[in-house]
Length: 382
Image 1: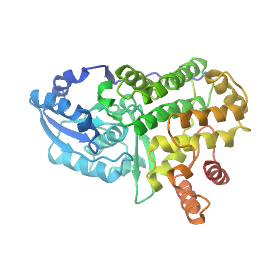
Image 2: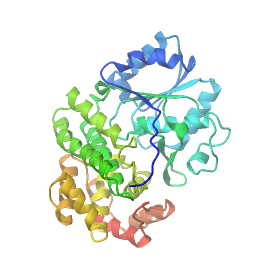
Image 3: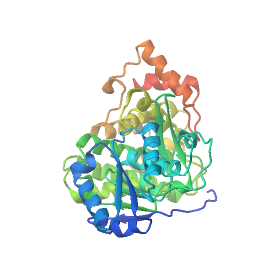
Image 4: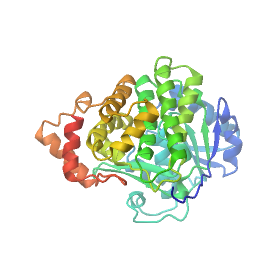
């Protein structure tokens, strides 16, 4: 077990009606609010009206930047940061799913910087300050509400990369499961896949940490039990709450304490599918993970067997991989490129994806991937 520091400064407010306090809490950071939203889901759920009315009732002035995509782009980050500077916003309120909150994290840094926001993503500039950020989550998936990481893509460069800094932690995160009741079945499923994938990235990290393993397998088992029930009963508040809490725990640090690192190779693969073909993030992961496991089954059989024992009480790698595919299929998420209309038997399509994988230096931290592995993975994902 490795040495570690446990640190998470986010004050998390969880449950029905928790945003009743958001006006008073936001007041503590200033009076001028830059509101970051997506493409309309927050309005459909009623979250937008509830949050904005509470902010206005507290005497706060709101300046809104809307339209953040599900695979967020750096152009929106730069435009929103420019608006925040122009309006001299004191605080950011991010109302949406992971893409909105991820974007807001980089916006918070960019508002204190005169250069392009992409400089942070490529670590060309080290931040020293950030605009305070308050998150209101409307989609259970990424765990970004309780961590310092953000993923943004640059379509011009065909790159989708992650960045993390302690200044990116939200000051407060509000998680009201009722705000997720209107999320459609497909994106509910993708969120469940995402939380499972985050847990798997920790499981296949470097270093032995038995208690973290138990946390990790417990989170996946929670998703396995309640995810299918939720997909059959989308307006069930209790099931929404269980999945929302599981998604937060999957990436708030608790699955990684005692390890040297998680792996993140599968996320790197998925990011390439999103940046080239705009595949939803969760869908890209359900396609990539079975293929990655097939690639690794003779390289790390013991670790795959341990996963099978923890989740399914089986220990044969092929059977475990089949169970994972069955799990993702049962959630209604794709497990092949063919299902999302990507034909890698086409030489042009294959070379385009391989080029982007090289450009993004697709690999894992614990389990390195070569360019030869990239080709194998495309065949396995086909």
